[in-house]
Length: 104
Image (cartoon, rainbow, N blue to C red; front, side, top):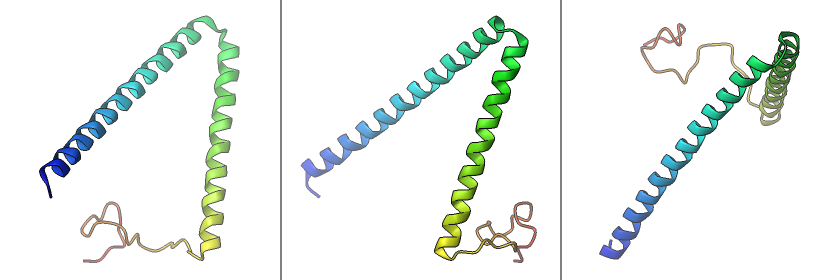
């Protein structure tokens, strides 16, 4: 590999690392902002309104989980991959806690 190609590869790697750090920083900032907004809302909303909003949010999350589950089940059926009820063959050998059916 030429020196220029190595320098380009090193610059790309450094750039990728910097972008990853910036994205993580933005994500952490967004999480802090969301937590602060929630804290302010909890202090300002009546308990019954807050409870109704929480119930609606929980229902939406449960609905999203059900939709993802249905889509995954349909995808497995369409591809002919059956879900096994037997031991998890993706487990690490010797990890009996994660897979009690594993024999080594």
